[in-house]
Image 1 (cartoon, rainbow, N blue to C red):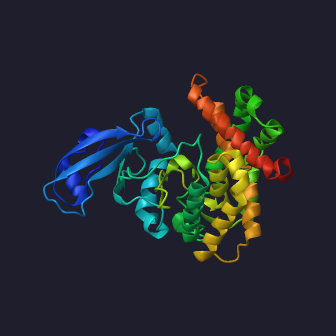
Image 2 (image 1 turned 60 degrees about the vertical axis):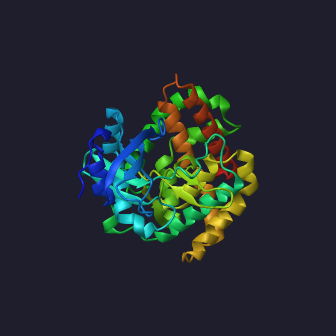
Image 3 (image 1 turned 90 degrees about the vertical axis):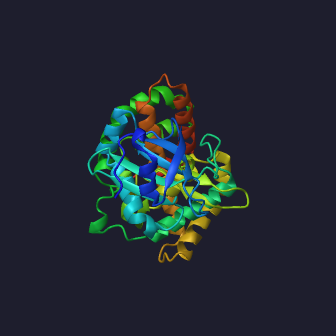
Length: 357
């Protein structure tokens, strides 16, 4: 097995030859995703081979741990590096859709020493979250999400998958303890931009996070959840191609699929566009689940779980990010303001405080 490079300086033609099982003569590289790959340094590598075989990829993407020690330690503590490598190595084939081709993935367990060499997706389009998805992009995204969820529907509560964090486990318990402490900090900066009833909703939510997760987990079927299923973690084909590739699987969890669906539509669409299309989009999600073998889960259940899930992931991300943000980061403040408005409005649209356990 090829070694794990500790820095990109150790990525050589010889090493790439081992990974790709061919003869790489030389390459050119550029660092990409600055400010996006928080937990990782990402490089696009254009390859020059000894032969002209048509099936060889002209370029690949190499992902290594972040150069920043604080981010590396956080990735180790949360098990994020290990989760992504194990996902690609052990679960990718069974998931079977919406994933980049992985040429090589390896980690020294318990450390930040990992590498992933994957398909270069530069021909696909990334959408800015502030701009939001179009209706067409949203439809493509919910369909591929349903296929991923269907592959693992009611199959994740088994011993061999206990390494994947539960959505009612220690990670959620930690956030539940932290949210009441950081909510006043969040509110001081962002409360004024919330819709009517939003501040009251978030105040109650900040003391109820574990209860809300538990309530959804007890009523909804479990599957493999991405847990950061937003538009900037996927890449889209062109207008004639509904291809969607989902990236950044570091935060995977086991729990209700409605979490991912609500997080996507609540945070990655303009509010009015979401309101006008969400019933059709949830219908498309449910239809795709059924087409891929899911039984005994009615549209009514899917719709109710989706509405309830708006009280969880998007609100937690807004408060947690806003309560820990460097307030000199004006771009960050703008994004959290936008996220808060979208997610809080979606939660209010689907019952808000009336749904609180």
